[in-house]
Length: 498
Image 1 (spheres, rainbow, N blue to C red):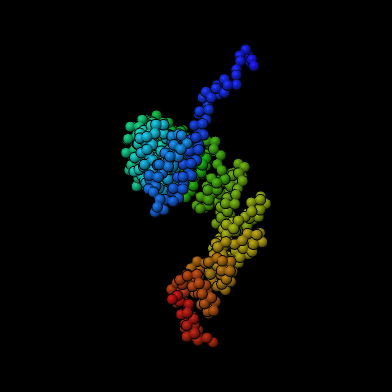
Image 2: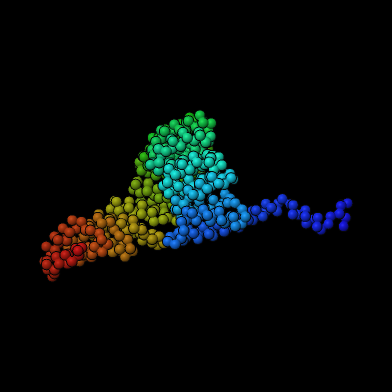
């Protein structure tokens, strides 16, 4: 048959196909896949049976299995095979079996070993606490026909910076890194700066940050924001304020997240004015504060009694289109309670429902605690009833507030009833509340009820205080009713732990 002026016989066509180069490459890939699967099956079996006393030396067997698995399929071990074995041995914490593999990889194989194999092993060494092995492996990388880069360096530095005990090796590693011709990048400095912040070396961290430009690295606003977050976590308001000013001088703007943490630090340290200034600075820089930032500043003004600022800031938040959450309302309710405006606080609960922000138990607890503080325990109990009607269950804190409130007001019988309800719900009062209840009941000659409370304490392995025992003993001595003194003392003795 003639096609395009040429005659090709069937035999010639078959001969031509045999010479196609892609078929040999495909066959090699297929063989390597088969060999790798054989290796996986055998290696897993060997490691599983490693405790068998009749099993040969696993170190020798793993290496020989690697070679035999590939020889059987007419090919040589590839990087995937070494990667699989090293990761498998690391997962099983059989690190003593890895050196023979590394020696064979270094001295026998000819391919360029992927750096990822060493990065993974360095990380695994670090997790196992084999810090020196991790360092030695890093500087050994070039012997495996592999160029170490900042990738494996960062893994090693992360391992070294994880614990204080290994930080002293960082200097040695950085000095010797020049031997490997690795260029220090921004990521390296970030790891080191984080480590310095974690151990409280804030001055050194900032100094290192400023030295980045001498190594050809230019820190940007993102890097400074990350350092600012670390200072918020590990430092104090003074360090944060100084660094924030330095960022401003460099015309770097923190991220919204960093600003939020800065506000939290200032509020916790009682520097509410500084927190308020940061809030205003965010708006000037075009960073819209979120509801969390506003709530934090609101809480700060409530804590220092700046209630006019609280109202102004709450209104401003609404004007900006921010929707208060249950925590924001709880902070505002706390401010109303501190001003004695309990009616306003309760009205705020209704307002929350109107805007589809269902009050949670924390909002009710805030008002109940404030009412009990001024002695209005009855209204606090009414509020608890209102809370139940709204489908909100009382918490441990709810019952503790009411029990302690009744005790402080001297309404022992009402407190005892609330205590029983509390115990029936599975909540346990404070040991001091138990003691106060026993003392109050004994003063009113309610010895049976006092004994019930005592039994509840003992059943929960709560040791009564000296005042509780004295109150029980005194009440028994002066008791001259139908039950004699000796009977009560025997009951008390029976409650004592062995």
